[in-house]
Image (cartoon, rainbow, N blue to C red; front, top):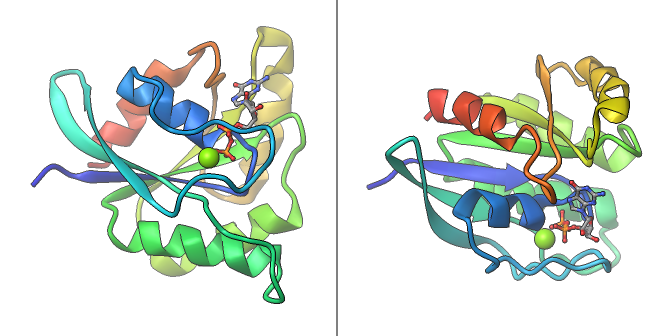
Length: 162
Ligand code: GDP
Ligand code: MG
């Protein structure tokens, strides 16, 4: 059974875009409107000759429970079956209270976490990524899921944990 890498984070940070980048196909649904990813969706991926399963997350509805709890719950389901986690944050926005809800859940789980500072589309935005050190998951890998910038280094780090 291939090891499992879960991609988690709040809506609209670019998880599905990153998944498409990782699998080299456009199968994960990318939407400007948050929340369209159907539950958890798994894909087979390969990097540096290693086969693994990547799990996209999302698919919650806004309801009485509130967005923070919903996001954290969905992420938790994926984290429970994962060997390692890529936690995606939007570096153009910085950490939000929804991100913090995911952080709390990830600390509780104790699985290896690789922090992806997404939407670093060019070098001038790398300073934004540095501010994510404060989340406590070590080096924030600056990536642009859309352009593929930095995603190789991110995957190298993630595969080291699988
Ligand atoms: P998800 O809800 O976390 O799965 O996010 P999506 O992958 O659906 O992306 C949400 C929005 O962010 C879409 O409009 C994407 O085109 C955009 N997006 C994703 N990655 C990047 C990136 O690296 N740079 C920029 N500028 N936009 C991105
Ligand atoms: Mg998505």
